[in-house]
Length: 124
Image 1 (tube, rainbow, N blue to C red):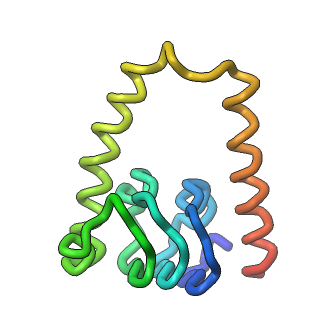
Image 2 (tube, rainbow, N blue to C red):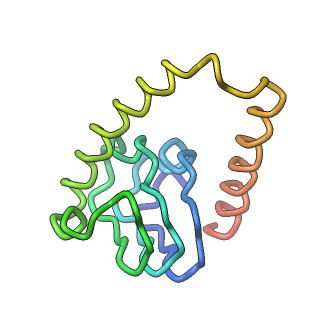
């Protein structure tokens, strides 16, 4: 899977994309995400995914990424995610006291990992 260069996830009703993809597919060049149900922004980590050159996002009800930004291409979106991510990380550090107990916060990542493992099975 480390040699996979294109991942086509178009038209799959996805409502989120896991940050695990960055670690799992470090050499990916093209990520096709058009026509899904992505509503929030992509994970900030995607802005630091150096191999990624093309990401299709049309046909998603994205609220955090404006069409004018998307039309500038992936390099502009990646820059936005890097900038936004830095702000988000700082905000998370400020609100660290308000985080849920460890038991609650550990449950979610396992679900994301399971989703990526299932995804990998489908890619092979």
